[in-house]
Length: 176
Figure 1 (cartoon, rainbow, N blue to C red):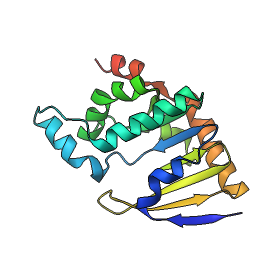
Figure 2 (tube, rainbow, N blue to C red):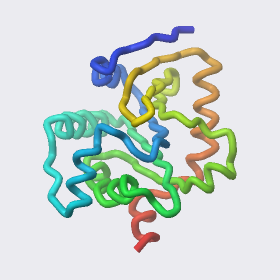
Figure 3 (cartoon, rainbow, N blue to C red):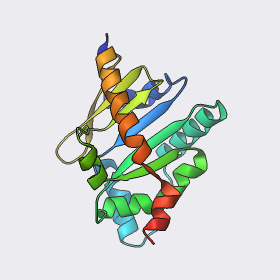
């Protein structure tokens, strides 16, 4: 069993280790890194693509070309927060590059019980990348863990919640 701590600067390099699959649980409801883009969107301004966005898009396209799925599950409040409304509005771009983005209502998560209150990735079904955030939702740390109990616990939650997830397009259409 290995539990390794990484600096934020190592985030991108950790994705280079993915060989078969990547699954993301995204439950914070807001991420500080996106604050400027959210503010622009709320002001009705166009949000330009950044170099970081383009690098991510290239990465996901590469995964898809290699037949490696990238799935993301976002938790949605009722009513959605401004951040979640923005994500609903801009996620088509993620679909275009090959991400499988789905949503689950916070009420469903509460009913299913025992949901992690933190974000994580499952890489290749054998490693979990835990994302650590501060109180204002800045990413502050990364912990990669391949312990069998840790991996099994996170797979179990994925397997419980994923069948309740609504594909992005369906969620957007349901909210019109």
